[in-house]
Image 1 (tube, rainbow, N blue to C red):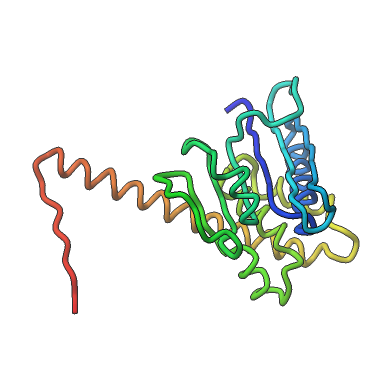
Image 2: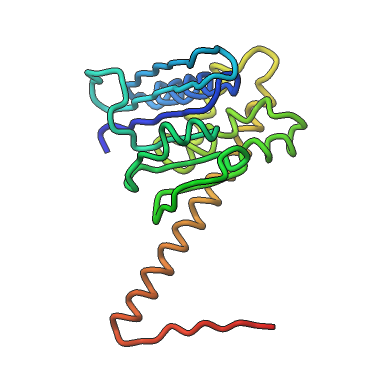
Length: 208
């Protein structure tokens, strides 16, 4: 894919602008062209926020995301505004800590308790943005682990580098595991369909 477009959405104060900047730095480390922009709701903290990242091997002529390939929604409001209208070709990742009601999707959907697991691992929600960055990066596969790590190193606030690198690792593992589960499910569905087309039968067994 010549160009990848992502929206990282949530509420002000979640640190998604920083996560988007880290993603952009990772793309620079990979030798790609990148544009990163952001917008806020009426309140800087607690209002809606959106960060846009465009990564391309070619020159980027327009700095805004038109048709996102991936959307991260870390609040119910963000999901309703940016996730709900999406077609199923767009990858949708929601933080199920806050987004609990989602329109059914057949593919390209990941619901992970990013903030809850961040708090369980680190004792606070402070690094949930970087955990989310790890999830986004692992699921999308746009950049290597090392490039994303360089982005975190470049932009982590002073005194937070070790914690943010640990948060990246947590998110990366979550993303890889979720992606593998979705791929296994898709493969099983293909196998079941092939069996039906070949005249086979699918049996369901239940235990007591």
